[in-house]
Length: 114
Image (cartoon, rainbow, N blue to C red; front, side):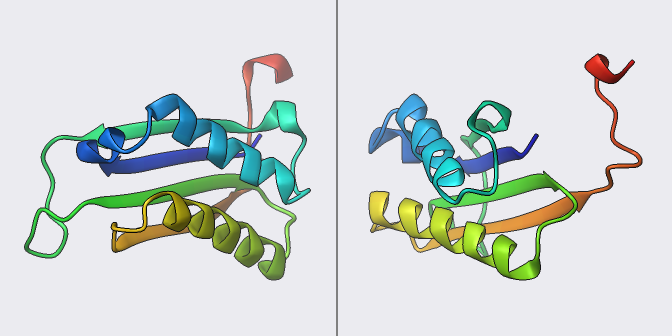
């Protein structure tokens, strides 16, 4: 159920393979104990052209979309764990961030629910 979508500068992929980065975010999300492993979905969007502030500084931003029901403390823990892992993997990148959006169970629909 949780979706982790990483936007990043394309040059991030010179340090680590895309598949490795995705696996690490998946592992950290699972290790928090907030999600079943089979429910976690992670993907990346590397960008060739971008501006951070007024520069072309490298960046990673994780957008998490999770089902409502987690506490603020749980969501803060999840964000901190993932940003900490990415900061360890990419010590030279200054712009690493994450935000979490809840979606309502009442309005969520997928094919299996039809």
